Image (cartoon, rainbow, N blue to C red; front, top):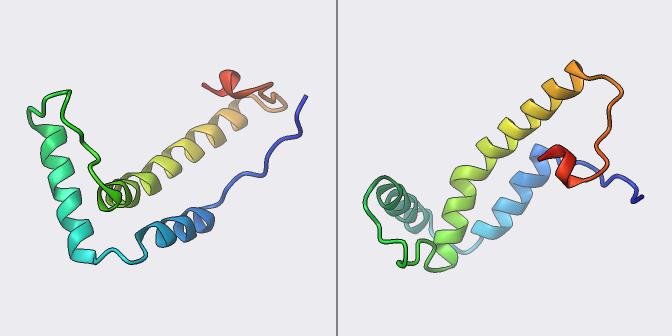
Amino acid sequence: MNAPAPLPTADTLRTALAGLLDGIPARQAAQAVERLIANYRGATPTEAPILRDRADVAAYAAYRMPATFEAVRSALEAFADAVPGWAPGGHVDVG
């Protein structure tokens, strides 16, 4: 069995996102987020690319990752509290 990997922290995520956003003007990232939200809520054809370029990827990551990270961290922490001593054997056990 593989040794458990160290869990990332919110600071690790912030640092990674800062690197991803480096060189992308804030206005461009904000416009990409607005377009992505509009596409998500609208009727974008499934064959149309959603993440078109690096700015779209960075904007999506910056917009969604912190909340997703916190939600998963919180859920796993609550599960660990509810079932003390249980350890997943692999990713499938967590999923």
